[in-house]
Image (cartoon, rainbow, N blue to C red; front, side):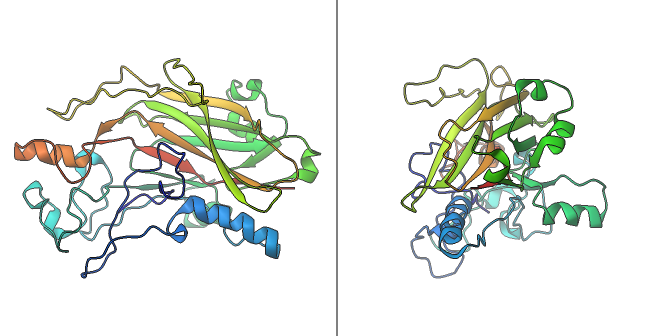
Amino acid sequence: MSDSETHPKFSPEDPFADFETYPWYIQQDRRGYEPRPGDFVRPALRAGLALERSTGVNPFRFGLIGSTDSHTGLSSAEEPNFWGKMAYDSVPENKRGRTIAAGPTGWSMSASGLAAVYAEENTRASILDAFERREVFATSGPRIRVRFFGGWDFTRADLESGELARRGYARGVPMGGDLSGKDGLGAAPTFLVAALKDPASAHLDRVQIVKGWIDAEGETREKIFDVAWSDGRAIRPDGSVETVGDTVNRANATWTDTIGSPQLSAVWTDPDFVASQAAFYYVRVLQIPTPRHALYDAIALGIAEPTEGPSVIQERAYTSPIWYSP
């Protein structure tokens, strides 16, 4: 129904934090929603670092998956093929109907998402094994494919070898894994990341690595690093990458892949690494903007852009974290 990675309240310096937020409680008596850290993934991951510092155990070492939350018996997560969350909003004519007074409509709810699993075999046992080792990732709907490995001596040659997965497993850990400072002997970890677009969807905008850590005073911090991006865009003075642009035609709900890239990859070393500070790292992949389901419905109804929910969405994928322990 909504995206749970983070919220602008908890990640005010993240320009992509306000994504498919759902500002209501699921109840009949409407009252204003107050975001809490326990509602979102990134604050929970940060809380896990703090708990580990005080108790010696991190209870929030979890993997990330995406799923739908529909009550129609249908699990379509694609924007042009979204059949609503409830039976009442399964057709465009009913999208403005409300079951909760002054609350959400079919347009304000999200169509997401998908769970992706790196299993050795397509069997229940193998898929369960992948979940248990947290080698899973989430997407908001498209079938974006992303690999993420952490180690101590990855290089560009590993990225360009044509056997990224084999080298990643042989000399590091995959998403969901753990790195120990004892193995790294004080060196900064290096990460391999490769993302491939959904062949039936849009090009990719950028690949980011989200870092959370606990500083010397015991406070948790976070920072986002752009590690690969399309179109040779410039880096701003603050270190961020210029906006990718928007090719969506609001009149007919189409877009063009004249911007973005079909695949992006990087080998990255944390420039702010401190060997004594516990941390987590996960990957966020962003697509270029595409039409959201609300725009398709508005066009079907012959009306202007919808007033509830945005007309354009920047789909994404999130990997499970890799944790670093001193």
